[in-house]
Image (cartoon, rainbow, N blue to C red; front, top):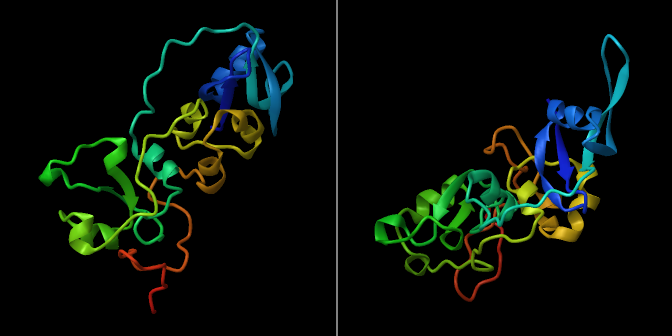
Length: 203
């Protein structure tokens, strides 16, 4: 069943709920629909437009929320579904500093990687291979990550998330029911070595 973006009365993104939950909010006058999903739902007593975005009618105070949870979906969204080493479609998670060498499972040490690079790197440091990344990994920030981190997206949500950060990921990373089925791979490049520019691998 499709999911629906829920906004606070102040338009702040709160999260994603099921279509059923969103309809209950609207029918009980606890929310209003801002965007339709383009389909009509029928019942014995009538028909209603399925919402894609709803806004609460009363402001809800949200408790302090810590860092974005480190999940596979959120990680792939942050890294655009691409291997940070060569740019191919990401299919696995890699610890920059291997856990066997004291690396921790946290945002600044975890990246998306393809199986080839993950296998080649194994438990070695990047310096051992002469590899480098375009930018160091970091925890994502912005209220939009309450939604982006779920891996569930709808293009109709973009105008409501744009003021709250993370829109590069929202645009580039497509949602799939299975996280491993990510964007089609571009021309693969070799992992970047120090002092080198990107160069395509020969077929």
